[in-house]
Amino acid sequence: MAAKRSSGKGPTTWNDLATETVDKRRQWLHGQNVTQYVPCGIDWDAVAVKPMPLGLDALDAMRSGIRRGYLVVADYVRGELYVMVPIRHGEAFAGIPCVRLLGRGHQVLVPRSPLDGSVAADWVGTPRDLDSPVLVDADRLAARLQDLAPAYAEVMVS
Image (cartoon, rainbow, N blue to C red; front, side, top):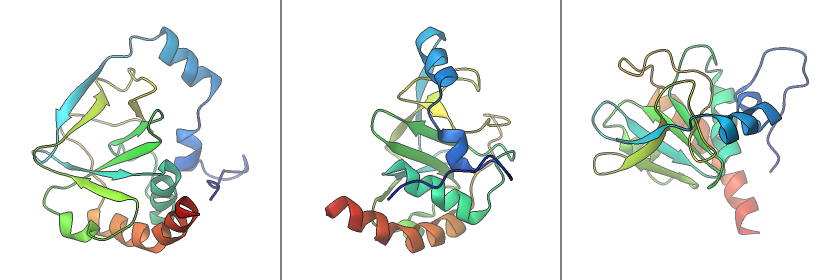
């Protein structure tokens, strides 16, 4: 399933933000690439979504504002998206194809600051404050993923 792209007219989408660009690749090659593993289950849980376009489409379907400063990380090596949600919402994601909840005992590789990043961990959008994170509503994200995941799972199997 192809990811939806903005036509250049209208608002920027999560898919637009995650598009690999020449500038992004240049930053990965010549930047500091400072990333670190951060434990899940303390300040937030991470929803791992593969393929990445499924998670991006779910965020777009939620109409989650790209300027809110949500914690969303793209791993272009694995083709996986990590969306940070409030802790203790694992039941909302149970049984959704292409989705794993990473809670206590897991770690996620994240850029140390909004200016850092690598091909394995790059912010999609710009988080406002890493010490007081803005998290995506878990129930709304789960509902959108539940709606969209079957089509992605079907394509991955065939």
